[in-house]
Length: 234
Image (cartoon, helix red, strand yellow):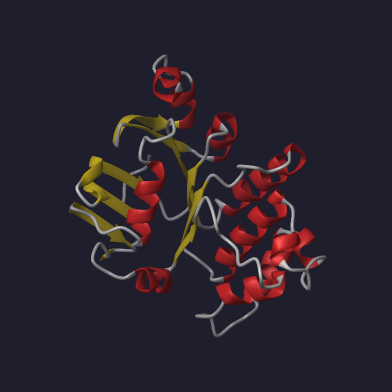
């Protein structure tokens, strides 16, 4: 990865749930533009990492610096106002709200609502379903809506936890193409089990094992590393 300053600078992060520690002295960096992949088997700590960066989990120790500000002790809403967008793996949309209402909720802190038009240009399928209840959308459409709602808020950093999970194969390439295009203008952290997709979208990759970074480097280098399959296999 190129030399800093970085939009996100996480150093020596330790975090977990109650007395159960999940992350151990973890360091991860993200540039102002471009995608970074976070890979690892189930239970490696990937989702915990994103939740800690987003403010849903308080770190035990370590530094989280976002846009040159120390944010480890800030509430989630402050990080959102600074430009952090987060799409969790599950429960990322409000089923009893329409597509339009979900999207506008993402713009609640924005005086300029033109971000909605930008999102509909990125995901035109959502424009065809603005009045439809989110609960009636397909898995792929729900993922698009969740990503779209985060984008309406004009984030500087977009964190995505398994954006292609449960998505029909015909929509996966579309989502990958849009993420590749978005990475030219904003920073993206992509947690994804679809390894080839993640390494295609991202320029740099981190591989987690048991809550720590076991392997990292440019995506092409990580793809060719003999240890990759060992860290990803169940």
